[in-house]
Amino acid sequence: MKHFLTLFFIGSILFAQDRPKPEETEVWEPEPRVVAPGIYNGPPSDAVVLFDGTDLSKWRNAANHEAAEWTINKDGSMTVKPRSGSIETTEDHGSIQLHVEWKSPTVIKGEGQGRGNSGIIFQRRYEVQVLDSYNNRTYSNGQATSIYKQHIPLVNAMRPTGEWQTYDIVFTEPKFDADGNKITSGRFTVFHNGIIVQNSVEILGTTEYIGAPKNKRDDMPGYEDQKHNHRTLMLQDHGDLVSYRNIWMRKL
Image 1: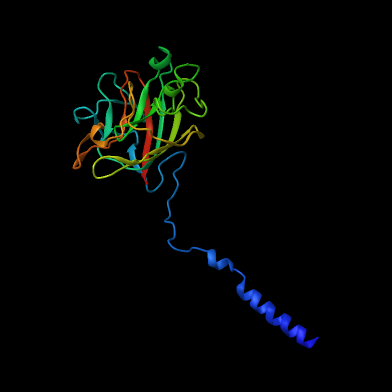
Image 2: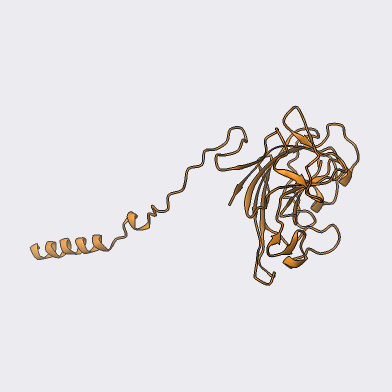
């Protein structure tokens, strides 16, 4: 009996030594840096504020790079000045988290693509649609929050016409080799008014109104050469009085 207990004790020790320990799967480094959240959809501490309602200093005309001419309103928003041209950021961007709030005019004019139409175009190439899609039928891959002409939103999360809409977008940029061939597709995740409407969908190429998306870097808007590869964020002038406010991004 004594011999048995001795063997049992030794076996218990050996078994305990072989058992995994919780510490073996704990990772302590690197420690995530601290980012202070914003208040009421405001920018977090590491965000780049693109528009805070005061001026258009971080935007320019997308066609001629002159000063942006959109209207700044007393409520801290800006509104498209029809036919003045789309505007773009003064700096390029890569993969980002973007927050944008927008609204279409309260007075309903037009229908389909002719009502409250604008767009948010990443790197001058990939568009998330802005459109008054509240009780306003159009082709499904062209309604609000569609990846234009590529992906239909999972649901229509529109608030009524004239109310502020919120987009929170995660954009992962595509990757190209030295010859300009795409080696990894980009992706979009989009939340509309807090509801997920695009869940890590593949970007099929450039946004095209007619024809297939382009995937050769040399054929893309904004690309001149490796030193002049313009990848700005654009807001589209589609001729409608769409307003924007509280625009910020986080570089990923």
